[in-house]
Image 1 (cartoon, helix red, strand yellow):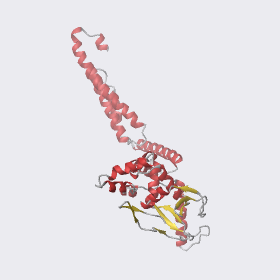
Image 2 (cartoon, helix red, strand yellow):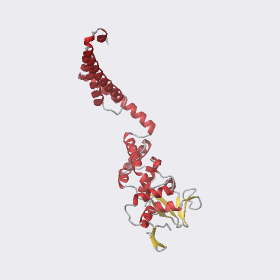
Image 3 (cartoon, one colour):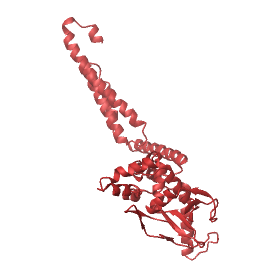
Length: 328
């Protein structure tokens, strides 16, 4: 601007070229400086990336000053960035970095109740849920059935599914959808345990528990109604079956949880759960080495074992067959 004010008309073209060159470099310098500030505020960003952005910003700033014919004050800043730290300076910066990391970790633990490893696992679980919950073809009703089974109070008697008011009292209680219970059982999301009085208590299988946890993480993947869920399952199976009846029969069956989701899903542990597990492991090691631990009760073996009571039976209607899995 000073040069323009003192220039003659014949120098206008040269000053125009200088202005464009300086402006181009100044815009680049500002872009890299903004990115450097963004990286500086991100605790997960590596220091090498921040240093690279800062150097690029200074380099473009020096070029802008040089193009404008101004004093290149940016060279001093560039020299400071490229200067190697002394041992004392490096140790001081490393101490400060570790202190900031410890503070951030303490804040994250207080907010989530989990350490870094389990927070990362929780993030991976959320990603899995977004990709696989919709493929289950479930509604919120299927989730309620599995939640009842998770409580240990879902039982089957006289062709009906109910949730007992109290554990061990297999009489009465809230009625649970028979159709959804049978569908989840047939798809191996549920398993039964026979009681002495003939009642069958339903509990989630490992696949059922994983699917339930994923559905809780991504409820948006559940369908609004049974009809919408059926149509979604029908759209998935129609290419694998030629006959219309076969397509409908396949759509009525709940698909299993994808094998990749089953392998990758891990339930994250809270810090309190990790502490309790460490105490149990320490007590077990003490007993194995010959010590006694009166406060720890020996686990009781299960009185009954899980079973799949009946194989699929074939029912005939109108001259056409349909697979049915029953609980009684």
